[in-house]
Length: 297
Figure: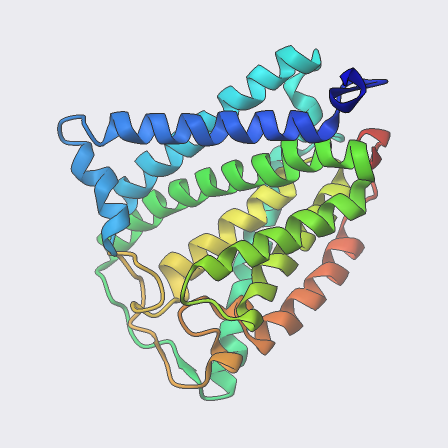
């Protein structure tokens, strides 16, 4: 019976993965239940589940997610007797802040390219400014902070601990494919998603894993992830596409979902697939291969 749970390196990867996810999910539920009962905070947290929300709502909710992930990761470091940096946080080469910044700029360009293609096909219009400059600056900074937390949570969870642990059992790329495809199919629980739309999150997951493979750490992937969410949520997306209370442009979509991605985002369209294919080539050309044995299992 012991062999089912314990291998040559201690607790087997699958069980450690389940322990981590159980701690994360349990903490998120507990912290959200506490937050909704706090004065002036409860309504803000609840707003996220009522259709439209703003930066403050996102900061509180994503802050809960990040706290839960970090506590769970810290707990696993004690069980596994390894530093947290092993889960992708420790830079494998100098310049983590640089990779984060470059990733952000690259992510904005990726999304912009998707919408420019749609504009050229006459299925998207940029419109005009939806908010005054002062509101745009303040709102943009707030949404950037929210999207940074999203990137830290999702990359730290999926390309950090989950990728590291699963790769120990089945290898880096089998783990990356399994995580990315699974993450894509999770989106089918959202009634807005179709099978075509599932491919967008899955390919983005593979791109983030490729960034980890090439650089050896999470920082480039976090920067791209942050920028993609920021660009789609705040800069380019039509108001009906994302449940945000603050949009920079009065943009509109005019075409079919296979060209626009409709309410999911441009990555769920043919245009998105073309741009993402090019993104792999650019990441490969622009990075030095810093992978280590820890990544390959």
